[in-house]
Length: 637
Image (cartoon, rainbow, N blue to C red; front, side, top):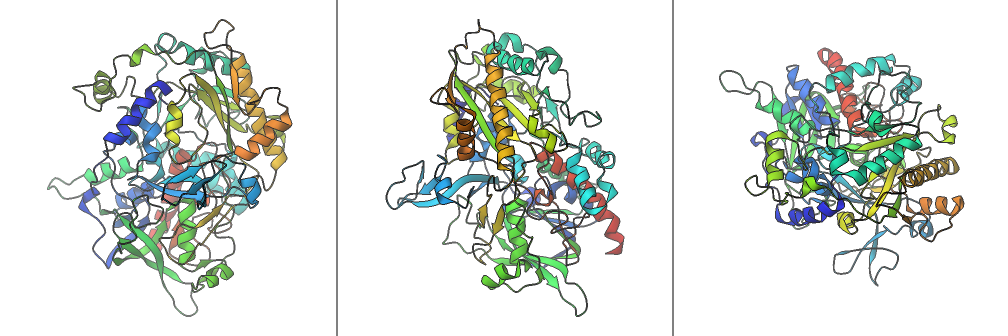
């Protein structure tokens, strides 16, 4: 992440350089009634890899994506610019969610957002008259490549238990960690994974280094030793149980470009035979919103998915910030000879299943949707990594001479820093060195004795999402702190339910934070806050950063653990939702939707529990595993 002094200048770039829209392969989904072997709905970490693998196995594949092609957007491509990508209007859907059923509890969160009578947003405790409550802002990627195109590019593998839990639930031994890690190795053949280079860090970023040294020392380590470790050493049998400091890994390639399923698909589309024809039967249909799965029904047989119905056109979903209610996109149908694979994410996959007649009968009937399969578990089990932060102001900021020549212009002729990134992938705009701390609280004894909180920080303090949240990243150059993500949160009481039977209506999303295991999870988060304080206090007394003044959670001084936990509960946030079509509840261990044939789900919604602190890399690996399962069944379909 770029330092806050720099981010304020990126904010200007954000407004000046909007991406152009280019349709991959020239396909925009406008041709109705086409037939393919497989249809994959979604191009993100779940859908992208499996689409490529099916095509490379010789099958014809249509990949349907509601968003457009923003692969030329510099905020997505350039690691140093990634702090602002999630606010790009061409690349996101704006969801607003609830954290609690209790409205009074919800109103204690300062991020609660309202729509004012003039159509703009208000976030805070005192909405103006006439403002309508929306909820807590939760942006999701709607673009070629999905949410991996708008994230912070962190790539971390989860614990062994996050895989073996599927074996525990289903008895399927193919989910045992040794077998899963063959899929991880396959993922690494196409996904770029890069660790920031700490060369020159002491000279260029002494204050940042002192923060990292403080965190390492609290864990009994040295900074230099920590920089040599691998956060993704999945073959270490003690990895999941021993706390430690690690250099952060990013899904970025060797030339400093964001690496995702979008780049994988694009590279595959570019492969040609000697005569110039496409090597694989892979078709990408952008700006195409799937609205329903179509089924073939025969008496005495389970319904079989035979295709999908779609709306053809950009910005068709009401969560799209560029949605135009005056535009009615045309409808088309696409058919599959073998299977339909849904990879639309934790919010949209249960919505699409329900719109197709698979879900709780009472809910479907209430929205006049014919019931195909009564499964009350569709859209349940919603869970996330609770997140919070400990934030201080220091007496100094982030002096970094490496940025002194940067002009913050995406033109190599005008900006030597951009020129360096463009030619080498390195420099101030490349992958910066960063350090994460995986901590183990006393509460871990009740959860397999695993490490239970991921802490990261420096000269910024990520405090969650609200409309315009990136402006906060550049307001105070002397802000320092640690954000943290709770691993394996105990509550999975959230739900995704239909707002209506209109497929362009976003669903109703309620996480029901701290519904279960609240005391234990709040204890863990508070332990993480104390770790952050200890790390800041461990900075040398002679550092120009000291003295510290805490901003949150203890903004008044002299706070107790009870105060801190109350603050955390009121202000916790999240952005790694999973679980709404969970294995064992909605799909089986081979990703097949229970109760029908020819339909699978391959995305973050199938996780029985959160896969570590960052779900992107685990979901890429999950897609590789699903590819093996689907291809094994292909000859029999």
